[in-house]
Structures are given as structure tokens and as C-alpha cells.
Image: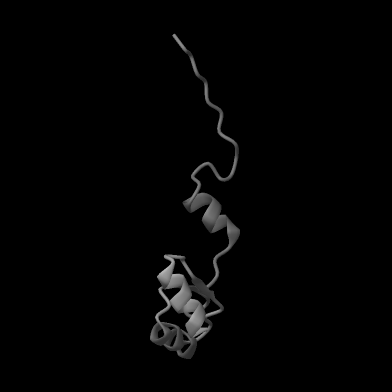
Length: 70
């Protein structure tokens, strides 16, 4: 794990550690130098409705655009 983290930092690769489920995992990730992570220790999972309404105000529906060259 340490090698992978060093490699990513050296080549400016964004590494996301998945599965941070408790405070111990979070502490371990931080002590290893992990910058990005996901898991229930960081935030509880949210329903898809939250993401489609909050991130995409159109609710995932296609948007239609009109364009006139004049």
C-alpha cells in the first residue's frame, strides 16, 4: 500500500481509497498519506434520488437546446 501511495504521488495520480468504514480505517488512511477516500466513515451512503436532484437539477432528464445561427 505504501508503495502504491508513493507511486501515485510521484506521478501526480489521484488515488482514491475505497472502503473506509470506521474510524480506525480513516486514521490508517490518513497516517499513510491518503488524500482522497470514500466509505461510510466519511459519509453514509445516500439514495440515488439525492444525487439526481442535488447534482443534476434536471433530474437526469435530457435537456433540449435550440440554436439559431442568425
